[in-house]
Amino acid sequence: MTYFEKISQTQIKKDAIIMGIETSCDETAVAIIKNGREILADEIISSATEHARFGGVVPEIASRTHTTAILTATKRALESANLTLEQIDAFAVTEGAGLLGALLVGVSFAKSLAFSCNKPLVPVSHIRGHIAASYLADKDLEPPFITILASGGHTAIVAVEDYYNIKVLGSTLDDAVGEAFDKVARVLGLSYPGGPNVERLAKEGQNVIQLPKMLKNYDGSEFDFSYSGLKTAVINYVHNQKDRGVEINKADVANSFQCAAIDVLADKAIKAAKQFGYNTICVSGGVGANGYLRDTLTEKTKKSNIKLVLPEKRYCTDNGAMIGAEGYLQYLKGNFADLSLNASAVIALK
Ligand code: KG4
Ligand code: ZN
Image (tube, rainbow, N blue to C red; front, side, top):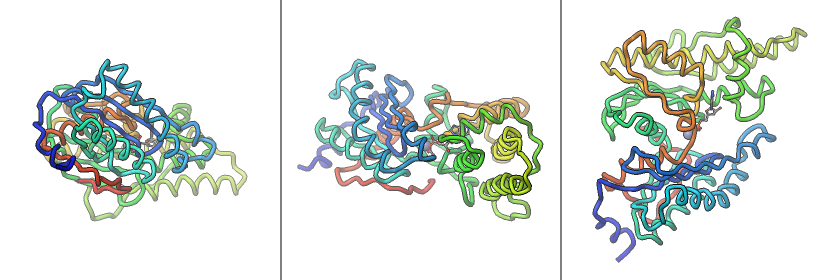
């Protein structure tokens, strides 16, 4: 009998302890989640400082760091939850999207744990993981709700119809919002990771630079985004001023860009909620950690009488807890993988 045949016969328990493993980028994250909502342990080892001197994530460094950090993170997680490996009911792991070499470390590690402990291996979409972080933030949260998915790889307004069905109402046609933050950071001479540094600088500036309106004269979905034009406009502004010998106010550039990038996210989410009759908006993905986005949404949802779920900043950026939360949902459905599970650099938003 193969591992998979044995595992598919396993009784799925409603009360389950899931280990969530995440290695899609530069964070090695391992968490232990009870019943999809309760965080028993949550460890993150980041290699961000090692990438900083290169101005962005170096995939090779990310993968190598994961290979050593993953053991440490797992041991720490078990210790802090006061559990042994045998007490874990299933091993959930990010199968994609992300850096292939980095993902493979987590996938291979999760396979060995699942195989040696004779427990289910649960593949999880990184994107669904981000969305599931809201279930950890609000223990009573239940679909339906709208989520703003705003990360380094994705930007979308998503209707979460139930725990398993999501509908993308609109998404970016080109760059993701986090990617735009990172590129703008670079042109302003700010170090990696760019998003938090742009936010910091923006606090000292004002929204005084005219930037193009997103998707003017566009007849696709009103919930779509395009960040490439905005990013290019900022880069051109900085270069043009430099060519003219005019010193730029970097804080004003950061602030004006941040307003242009974020306001549209908040506005479209509220519009979607009103148009489709949803009364809850959740925030997911690394850009969800942005203070201006959080403040803007808090104010606007209050005015519109919409409930807002803001996961702690730690659970907006990459973490293992969100993989454990989504892993629990997939576990309940029996969506197990066998040992041929592979990592995937790209995963459709569905
Ligand atoms: O979700 P995440 O950790 O990884 C991906 O799945 O992509 O998101 C990372 C992105 C990066 O582009 C980073 O610059 C951005 O989220 N980010 C922020 C902030 N914190 C992280 N962007 C704006 N403001 C922040 N405070
Ligand atoms: Zn992410």
